[in-house]
Image (tube, rainbow, N blue to C red; front, top):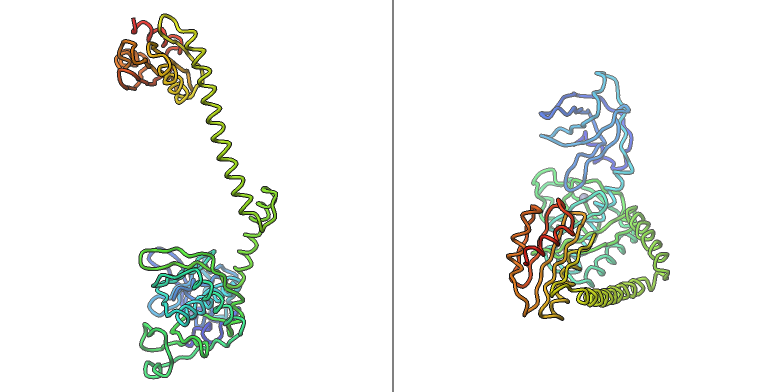
Length: 394
Ligand SMILES: [Zn+2]
């Protein structure tokens, strides 16, 4: 463990060391082994560090078979001299805040409600924990408040290496998964945990915890939260979104939801009114077409008319005039469309007429004796299609 500088002092950001070995793994990724390192390898839910070795980017750090592999962008020159390592501290300290915040929040759920944490993920934007029991909104708020009280109390965070015999002296929440070289992370009087991650010296450095949401899953609840600087980042993002909305809805923040609800309701009413107006227009149009009928049949060709309109028109006409037959065609962007309909007392099979005409436009369609429709390619005009339907009717 002596080569792991991050266990000696989690605040080391720069260090001098020597290269033990350079090598490539099976996938051809180049890595360096060092005499000592402050680079934390991925583990225990905490992501790996990044940084530089003599100015060369360290892009990944993994501990494999007891060696800490520093994957670097370009090989280092072979030298016995000391080299300089530098940790990306912004990234590391963020991980320390999120990771330690998770310890505190999980301990708060244990202490207040005896609910255990069974999963943990430290993501780029937010952090999640999985709790093994259903929880209420009130419990979430209570745990968040408890966690923030612990942060504000600025309690020390201590680490101790113990043997499994010594472990019995501590009120552990959960037995560690390892049996030797057990590393205890202790927030006195609050939390005793086996953990190999990096932590700040006191809870105050976590700064704050804010729970962002909870998602109920089969046998557990997933809680999303942020700690430290991420709380400010979240606040900034949410503030920007709200500012934009207060401007758009012309409403102060406190009544924003009500303003949005009013707008949505108004929109629904307008949609309904537009629907009614459209029906009235179609009825009016249908009456004009009925007036212009030619020996018991209505023929009409449109350009760019939605099929829904054509169907509605045909249905209105045949509902009002039992003895009429209606043929409507339209030249639309995607080809030629047609609707054929007849009233209850008119004669002829619309299905048969459509079937006879559709092959001429390489079309497809179908329907019943009363109502049929179809569409195909615009190889002839809408007027010509009407003529073909007329001929078929005779
Ligand atoms: Zn930890």
